[in-house]
Length: 112
Image 1: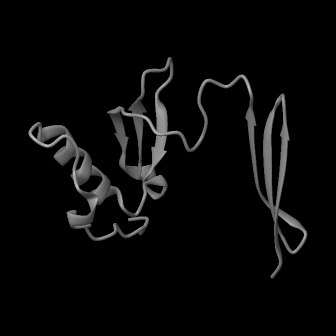
Image 2: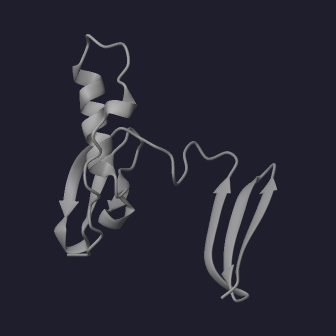
């Protein structure tokens, strides 16, 4: 299987296409005037859980809540949360030593 990644970067925005065996598999488009984009990191608050979709709506400070599917979470979300909590709660250390940080097990990406 051959894979190609085509990127069109222009002043109006960026378009990214993923081709597998010359067939379009994914297409991502982001306009230059967008105030946020897919892949950006936000601190938010869960507003509504949708168990049937394995998803949640998250308030990230915009007019509409963000949609977050369970499979969009990083497999390292437990480690990220642990590191963030330790960094926010330990006021005595100016910065945490990441070399001494114990990484948590990855989350499984099962749909259930």
